[in-house]
Length: 115
Length: 117
Image (cartoon, rainbow over all chains, first blue to last red; front, side, top):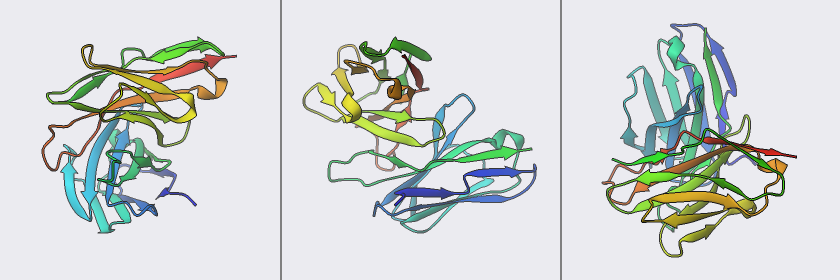
């Protein structure tokens, strides 16, 4: 059973399109994240939700909109895709408290290619 | 502000030799420190963490890391490298003085470890 699953694994699309990436975790965690990894492997947080509430919103274009319907899901919707959005997007989850500070569990990533 | 530096883009080591992957950090308070490993086409996996207590932390797959407050370092080590250890390694830090709502790690840029048979 995959702990953090995200779909699709690969996403190839044209500039200007709107696309979504879905993420689900079955670990019972209360916090979920979206990270972006660029072509140089640099990893940067985009958003974090705790119990469905946004707690981190880094400097990300407002074309990116996260949605958390419940604490097991955090989806990422991207409007008007641009070439610079091409990257690998990782979903992650964690459970605060209980001595498990920032032990993140990552999904396997979504490779987004904007043509 | 919190930051972390991994000074080496790549580390090459022969199989069976000890390995070290370097990490230094900067925080205004005390640090929480982490190492994660990324295998090709996979997400990051947690290796080990330092929160408080013993400066030598042991983690998964035989890895360990030593917290050195005076040098603000948290180098990852393993006594005997395996070919299967070849991967991308990320150091991460969070300042314990981060305010509420700042539950975020800052990751280093990663170090590619190649273990040569």
